[in-house]
Image (cartoon, rainbow, N blue to C red):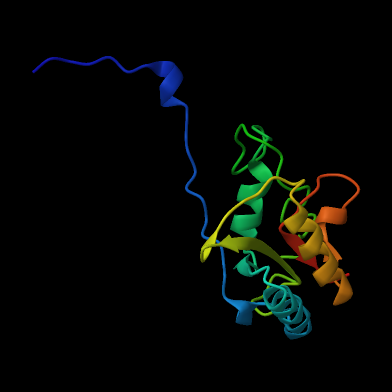
Length: 157
């Protein structure tokens, strides 16, 4: 049997498995969920269907998202774009609420094309329609954030 050498540079690389996203609307704060449902119904009636894709986040899920673009972040640091400024521990995301299921006050929703989710560019007019619908329900649209635009995101103020 031939011996193989180990590439020491590759031995140190660890890839963390992405914690699952939660798309159960009952895991959201009821008042937030009611406003979100109204906004999505309005969009659907206008022929601009959207799907709720992610709501409540666990600490691990939030830390995993925070690790993108921050290779030194523990425990999930890795190269890539910065996705969030909330580390999930010292700064909670609105997705986390108070950390318990049923308290999430943020969601990510995406438009549908032929019944399937698609991800248009941040400049696509569909995001302006989404931002307007959630804003009319008293929510804050990530499309309107002054920095780190997050078009699919909406949250309770």
